[in-house]
Length: 355
Image (cartoon, rainbow, N blue to C red):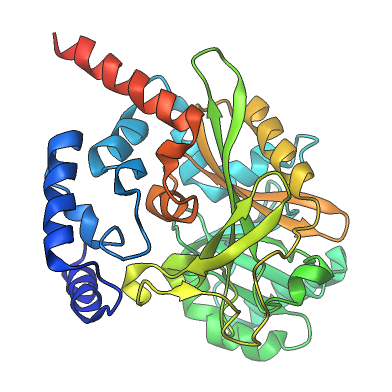
């Protein structure tokens, strides 16, 4: 963890007016240490706040690591597909699972359309390459994601209308890095009412249980802010849980502690009230994530699913999803019977391995 992030988190904690009384925090800290069997430094990320009355229902750092490190849940041979967005796009575009169309990609100054390679050395050649891509694909915008970065870092888009200017600004960045170029997702108009600048995605967590059933253990929503083209909370956006039965947003969302850790009841850009908003194609999105497990059979996956006017589409998948945000948005993962059973099983497996 970068030093500046820890510094920011400490400042947020010290300034937070919603802290529990000191005596109560000390009591809960000691209780967590005894029950969880570790020093619960994570307590000071959000469990210290007055509104959290069920601190034992939240995952500890060690419990999160049990999920991340489980050999039963994760197949190391699938890791390259999760880590590389190009491999992921190439796999899913050959299936019947909806995903953004792969238009082209580049590895430094080598640009590919399928297996056809073009060497680009200057601004004119780069402009010509994408001018042709816009003409051939009949799209108005192209979205760029680094092959292996995460959290929305390094993403940007080019538009047909402003291509000449944008190519000039993106030249050095494109020629020195690796990017996947996909079609821009047309977001459902109801979701555009909340925030239209970014594609706002559902984060759906699937679990393959010990009895080999695929369950959705969490479905939340992530929303961008300002002019950001990504919705990631690690890039300044926020996250919010859902009512899994109704497919509606909860009363409020949350910022990560690096961005103040506060609650969000209305979208900060336009005042759109979040509570009760019905997510279009909610059940279909959950079913699509479960179908994705058939193609990418890992035991615990965080799926990013966008909602278009015609239904859900899978943007990417993570074998190491950000568990703290989902834990917080669900008001404690261990209230979920499948998650509670999973942690119990993983602890028992670890105990047997230690013998």
